[in-house]
Image 1: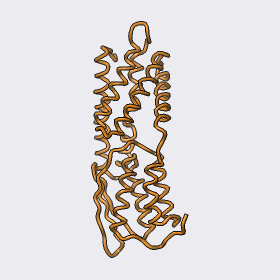
Image 2 (image 1 turned 45 degrees about the vertical axis):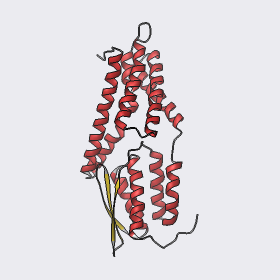
Image 3 (image 1 turned 90 degrees about the vertical axis):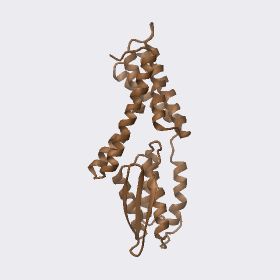
Image 4 (image 1 turned 30 degrees about the horizontal axis):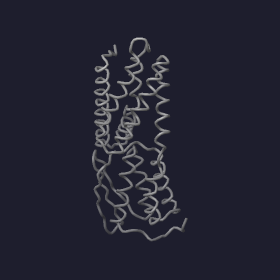
Length: 259
């Protein structure tokens, strides 16, 4: 890696870089406190300061170098949660702060992080399917229920990946995947098959539960980012309602009662 260049960008260039950085970091499931620390770290590495606010759909970032300031407003993108990308982006902020990477190098590295910080999608589907089948067994599901949960999760999660890739609305995606997964697991309740179809149906949609948005909203609330916390909380509640709609629709089609 090249020796750190002490020359720094102008405030507009820095604001645009931070806006792109923040949108990617926030969209991948980052909390506001981590976002704030990473951005301040990057700004300090070039002798600048920032002020920013997080709204449910936009980020407002103001960069100042003591003589002039520039404000950038960036829209938040809906992406899937990716902790590997958050880790790589956080590492980049530390490398800039420790003077191991210049701003010019960071600008070149940023697009590569978007492409490289990914998990093999088929491996992810397999692991999530095994996890859901294990939860089914944990809640006393029989072997038929476990197998049906594995298949339903595999198909549903893969469908979610495909729909996300084609940028289909996340609410429609959750309803569709919950419907497909519950429909498949409800088949385990047919005469002569499993004895615990209710457990199978309940555990087949666990991969759709918006646990991370709920946790992030709580963390943002504790940190004082109330607007962002409320927005994330409402988004999580809406996704949970969409999950319920898809789940109930699948059970209704198969005429399966939960209680």
